[in-house]
Length: 177
Length: 346
Image (cartoon, rainbow over all chains, first blue to last red; front, side):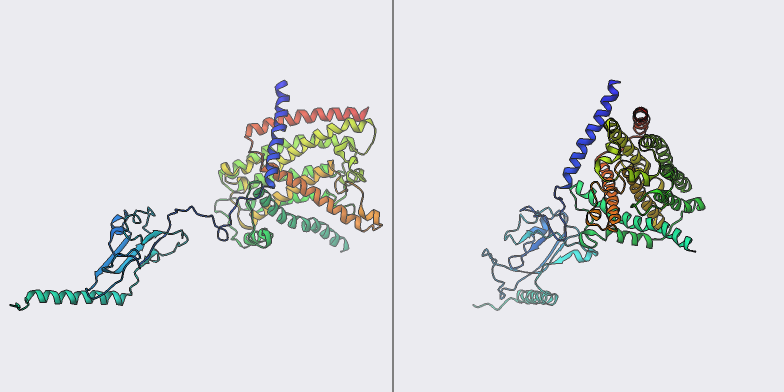
């Protein structure tokens, strides 16, 4: 019998406690972040979409080799001795035309392993994360600053130069003596 | 001809109140639940999401009316209408103001208890006709629960009838007029030692009745017939579109109906807790408007308490549900009834 009344008391008491808590929460401001309008401030070193600063890229291919999922495709063409590609911001001389620098973000695993080996620190992680697409092909980002025609031209130039060099080698120049 | 028009109007007036109420209550419930969980709730359709439920109902009306192949078609189609009919019929005997009551019958409360138990049959019909194990389980649980909890409700109603001496909700509301301590929760309109003896008993009666009506309308913590985590959504699992909307409307109509019955019995119905502004200013036409205001406010307050409980308490187990009814509510309400009867005889 004592148990019976104790149960009733407990039930009423605990319901009152619970209702007090829920009532208090009525006036606590919501924790919701209304996403497209408000965004969470991201941590300082977030890893999201990659960005390549092509002004600094020397086409060394180290990032592509470091990539565990092979999402970076780099194609370079040697510059002719007569051409001056300028220097990177760190003073390194550029010797290659980067005719293709594609990163496939459908494959990218955001591991940041490509960022560390870069000698000129031109590939880096940004805080952009809203780049979803309905086609995988749209997720392949082309970073190369050269147009297709320019690339073809560079390739042709190099081929011509090589050919000339080979020709020069085949017919040794007349001896000066 | 005139009679027919009056009948039709009489039928239509509560509906004109209920449909906007249901739209508001769904919005209100979503907002209350959101705020209690530190969320924002619907806030995209219209300012602060006011038009969310209107958008919802428009969507439901446009949806294809699916009738699954293996269902018992006549029962399946008639069940949502009967569910709504059962809860809507209760409004016939509920006085909205001192000038409007659908049907001023002397057996008001008895009639309401009778027609609202009709909902059980309709729910069982829906669960059985859907030809689905979840709906059937939900319907059976619902029937067991509603029949059990009808007993304490009725016992409490009887004890309050003993105090008030009337089953007519209109007369009952008129008894509790003019001030807050004439309300039945404070022992009724008669002054004297009886009032003070009855006060704690009325409070106990109110609590029992509120708990058991909560169980009758299948609200949490008594929502085992619709237990989402176990039974999908209970007896209306197979319903969609407009028929689902009917169940929803019936559920909210039921919530308001039981709240307003509790209000009419214990909290003075449509009566103001203090005097009327219309009487003070000498504007007699303003009094019914005030009464309607208090009717709505009191009803919505108890609907709010139902929502509040819903987001506070977890669902009961079936055995706990039956224990609560048969071992706690019924004995206490019986003792309550006997003591009230003794006090009234003395």
